[in-house]
Amino acid sequence: MRRTIGIIAGVALIAGLTACSSGSAADQCTSLASEGSAVQSVKVTGEFGEKPTADFTAPLSAESTERMILSKGDGNLAVPNGTIQADFTFYNGTTGEQLGQTAYDGSTLNPLPLNDDNMIHGMVAAFQCAPVGSQIVAVMAPNDLLDPSGNPIAGLDGKTSIVIVADLVSASISRANGKDQTAPDGLPKVVLDPNGVPGITIPSTDAPKDLKVAVLKKGDGAVVTADSTVTVHYTGVTWIDGKVFDSSWAKNTPLTLQLSNFVPGFQQALEGQTVGSQILAVIPPDLAYGENGQGTIPGGATLVFVVDILATTP
Image (cartoon, rainbow, N blue to C red; front, top):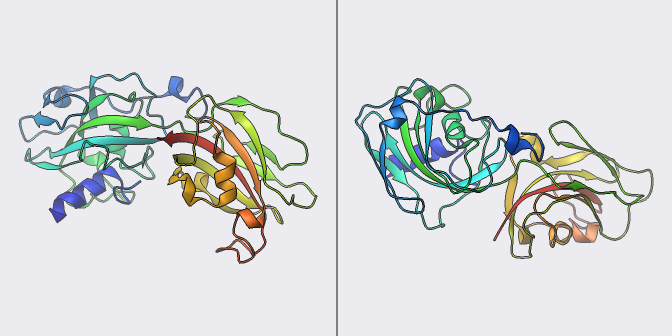
């Protein structure tokens, strides 16, 4: 059991099984895997939402990862640098042994960032550009099962393929894609680079005493509630010097967290907003980290966040 769990964790996410550049990213999405004889030889029993079984003649391998969509969903596409949630069943392609399986009841769904910095390439290739609601089968080639250092993930020998059957349950957008809005005067200015990463310029005035929130892009997705778990990209700077103290963009990994786990000002800024929106929030110390501060954030600091709302559940 320990060996099986280790392989699943390594395949799903190099760091462990945990958690396109604009609104037109879906239109520009480029699949990284196609059908081939290896994946076409895998016979799958079980529909989307059911625990499947895969039947194939071992050993089975491919020179590059192959993917076939068994049933195509009609939801969002899994776009590069977004996050996905999926149920999956893994098999050792060399032996045919089932290595593990998620619960298929929602209890084991976790956000997986869809990029090579956080997930092995075989998994990225298996999901990229597939629509939510799809059942997918893929044969992940040995060369696509390596960690960033080029070493085989735990439990594999560098010569073994992995066969995966997966249900793509959800997929976020990769950046705010809402309609541009006019920000009020007196607030920090925000400029986006071509990838959507914000740069923030603080005005040469005193920080406001109260929470200030501006919608920079207005999305038309689901509404964030007090009980929501949200997936966001964000950059945070301190008003006093404009220095970045934290950024999910720098990690190339959106953050998924229950809204109630953020500081109060962040919660208030996002509650009632919609997926696809970009929010500017100026948070006074009493709604942030107070007079004690935290980490590199000094006591009494007013914080400025630019937040892209990528997904929300429920």
